[in-house]
Length: 89
Image (cartoon, rainbow, N blue to C red; front, side, top):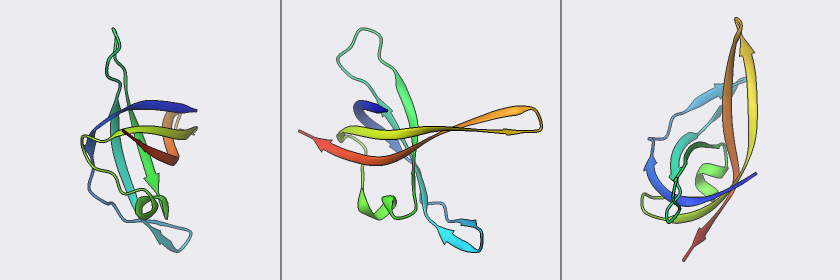
């Protein structure tokens, strides 16, 4: 999937441990601009993507991501995991 917008917020790096390995995790809020009814999405940069795609508030980007869902105790948890970010002019 793909989403184009401006980065409005970047969360602090959060170290995560999974299967005995440590990874970095950063959240970004991307909002559409120039449309009648703008939408926003929250994306996750995980592992090596955090260093590969350094982002900052105010950058216009095209983000490519996968949508994932997990079920736990009868509740659904969605995550949009970003795998590529292009900085736009």
